[in-house]
Amino acid sequence: MSDFDIGAMQRGDWPAIRSIYSEGIATGNATFETEVPDWPEWNKRHLQECRLVARANQQIVGWIALSPVSSRRVYAGVAEVSVYVAAGAQGRGAGKVLLQSLIERSENCGIWTLQAGIFPENVPSVSLHKSCGFREVGLRQKIGQRDGTWRDVLLLERRSPHVGL
Image 1 (cartoon, helix red, strand yellow):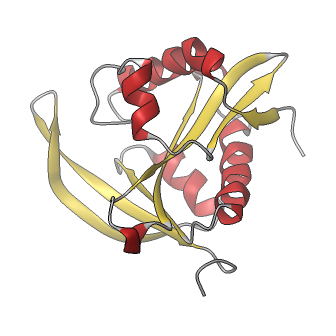
Image 2 (cartoon, one colour):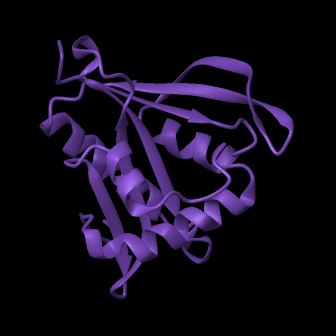
């Protein structure tokens, strides 16, 4: 299917994950975050069972993880996607393989809805999510500021056809 090996993220992968995340932050179009948190904070924010990395030639070139959208029990099957691909590996399919693998893994973990909040200017990310079955559900106008500028966020979601029916 691809030139990428997809595997579970390990604690020792953090330096590569941090580096790729930092590249994404630097673009200004990947996240509202302006700096990478330390490992304990990042680890606390993301679900343990849905973290994957993509490797090419034994090097991590991308990662994907889920965050709970709420601590309320009724939303236990709803999670937010974060996906980042190293600048040098973009456009080669790593993001798609990661997202497809995460969808399968998330359904095996009982997650029925995946959501993504994406800056509308991040056209490649919007296209990636739509190619994997996400649909636009709204535009959150001027929802937050990045570097003093109000930014819109496009909200996309994918509902599992198998889980939560």
